[in-house]
Length: 213
Length: 213
Image 1 (cartoon, rainbow over the protein chains, first blue to last red):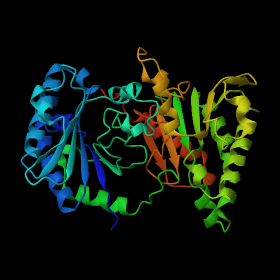
Image 2 (cartoon, rainbow over the protein chains, first blue to last red; image 1 turned 135 degrees about the vertical axis):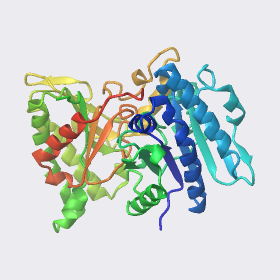
Image 3 (cartoon, helix red, strand yellow; image 1 turned 45 degrees about the vertical axis):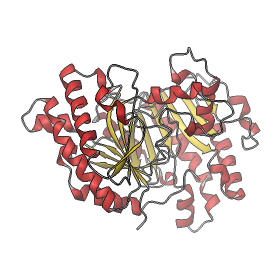
Image 4 (tube, rainbow over the protein chains, first blue to last red; image 1 turned 60 degrees about the vertical axis):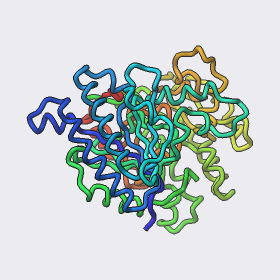
């Protein structure tokens, strides 16, 4: 079976899940923490080398304050749960803004936890404009644009899986997503099932890789 | 009905169509010209304001020479057929390479034909790295990254329609595609039908617009 080296995860639908389950929107985020950990373990079992989670973005921070506080808190808890595993962790986002939680600053340089292993990237207060703006500081002599972006330590993504039915990237790592295959699951992220992941790998196995060629 | 302002078109599957119809791969490109014109007329009827066609990319030019010559020729013919219509046309791509057909140089600044109207952008020898590399020349003071890329005259895309079943962007305008809804049609581009376009608009009408918020 042909496996993706690097999987991007867009865990969407937390708020819709909360509303459909009779809760207010901001209550949906905490239910997304456990699926993240389940998915990570499945990735490790499948020998995936790198996984990137879309935590929250600069765009997201424009939402009502109670939602913002709730998803920020959920991201902190999610990262803390990940570093209990054997992983090589990197948090990527704009740390120069008040929206970046100071609790996650220690993880903005890649560090191994446990016995290390799978690379896990977690986007926190990530913005596509922030990411690309770094290119302006780049050396004109540098050959690869991928070395000049703020997210340069995140590699090209082979497969993006998005929960919650929307078929769009919503600002997710535009450079790393350029050749990615894009698999959408209609279920909301809090309703994560092992089968979602296995079906995505199965679908990916049937795609060809051309890198635009 | 909520309509997209700007539609991106990825007309994929020409080679697979040719092979399945007993022809060699490079014979598939010419059959893609007429669908392009049909689609343009449908966009005008629907009062779409801007449409961008993925002609060919820098990545594509690495294909065998007979294919390269065939798709380059088909793009020239496609552009020439478009300028018989009432349009405001712009060809975007790396003109500093030998792969850019000199026949299309006159259209690399936007120009109105007939009575003008719908903006039509046609990507010819377009490369995402070429597009983003322009940022290095940008002024650090410029606020918007969208003003600093080589394709800055192409606006944000609301809806991308891809023919040929593949669910990926393949380097298509990474900055303008950041919030785009992505609709995939399994049929090959030479098998274009009016219903494809109408179904895509219908699907788009049911999506929400959040711009990442």
